[in-house]
Length: 42
Image (tube, rainbow, N blue to C red; front, side, top):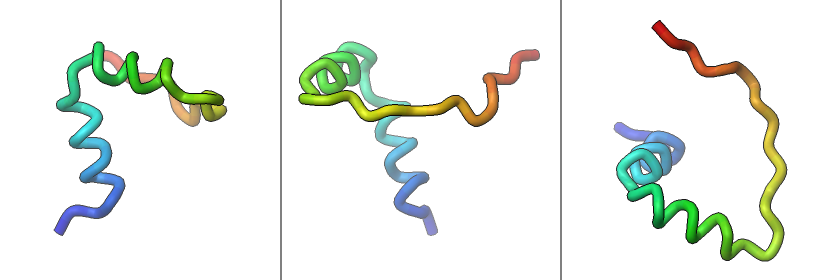
């Protein structure tokens, strides 16, 4: 069974970049964020 977070992450991962950028730019006030762990490569 998927959690709410898993469903949201799946939707965000499959959305076109342009759609996400447009939605982000339309926010009245962008929410703050903090990087908890940098991306891993390799």
